[in-house]
Length: 615
Image (cartoon, rainbow, N blue to C red; front, side):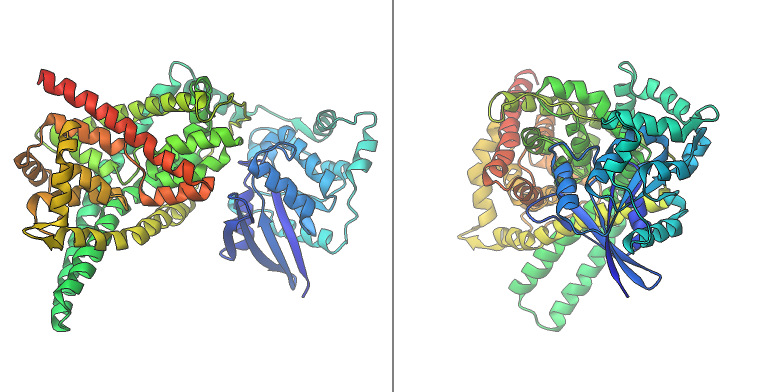
């Protein structure tokens, strides 16, 4: 059995990763290139008794620019020892994709062209002479529809022929000679396209895309539709997550009773059982019960919208606002990811080409309310601003209020981005290529499945790793007494004057500090402090929670300031670790913690004093 190395290259949104997944199945691994934060996937497949290692290179529009993705792809092709490079092209956008194909062929003449989405091209009225294209480029050309696993055997066969030197590939120099004196790539691309592609009918896909774009990217309707879509997402998440959260909480309470009984049977010391069960287990179960249902709903829905091709339209709609603030249009995509999880949003900043604009995006991502803070916001809005009946009408009102909060968060992010671009991270905003792919029917089952595994389980796992030791610390603070009061009581009393100045109290401030591991624990810590129970306590409903808060002096002013501080405070520990990993700098990590916290303190102070003066 012989072993060969293959690389997959191509523009973003051409189905390259779909081909990679179809070829390798579950035989794959995700990691980072040495010294880089750019992810890569590697896998393998066997074909005709030969072993093929395959690397999915970052999607890029060019290998002559300087983004990390483009640099990694170029360096990998130049330095990598590949027996064949598969260049994946979008059959519906062949003219644009051919430029990258020629660039790759200038580095690797042992290649295979894969015309993906071939069925869509035919439906849109395009006729592609792939045999002619193979003749002109001097490399094998295969057609495929990766989503339906069509053309994969032909692709494997072509790779085998190239790897085993059974196909005499042409070099780019030989290709250029055919079109002499057309030595510029873009002239060559036009010539090849005209010889190989014809339109045999009306391009229905393009017409439908243009028709939708006239609505979804319009200056008058684009942003209102985007906000409406966000409202629907929040409403579905808020409504859909309630029941699973209650079921999980009930299940974890039953398991907790079993653990307590087991601790009694084996005579486990109360101090040890307190740390392990009331501390670590209770914190973990709360994080899972609160985080899992919203993430399991929000992330798949978000992924379906992404798969349908709508996210680039959001970046297009918001690009001019970010450009005016000295930031990058792709920052809007990172902010959307931050709504699900700020750690994911920070990781998503890799798509921004320049370091300066990437840093701005990282520093402002925490202004977006993540999945761990949404339950707090929903609870506060339900109790204080949605009316007395906690029903469907109230949830609709909460969804609209959440959208208003989201708009405020975006405006604050733009303001802070502008200030950063004028002070700490000076420079001009750069332009960027933004592809608006055609709208496609999402692959529902596959998209939902991969979103759950890649995002929900991954984020939940990282949160659980941090929450476990934090649970022990929280329990110790509440149960270790000095004199007649616990350490937690001393801390909350010390912080109370500062909290009152902000329109809050010492208990709330301490809850944010102890909730550094996971924002989901803030409300349980507040309840634990108010009730002096020594154990983080769940609440059975908004009525009970409202009663406890009101008994401890909460007013509408407290609720508003709590909402502000929930949105504008330091990132959770998971996000901070991610920022340190992505920037490689403690300075930027500390600054990412300081900026939202200082902003929240200033805004809380102003709002609380204004409200107290008029209420």
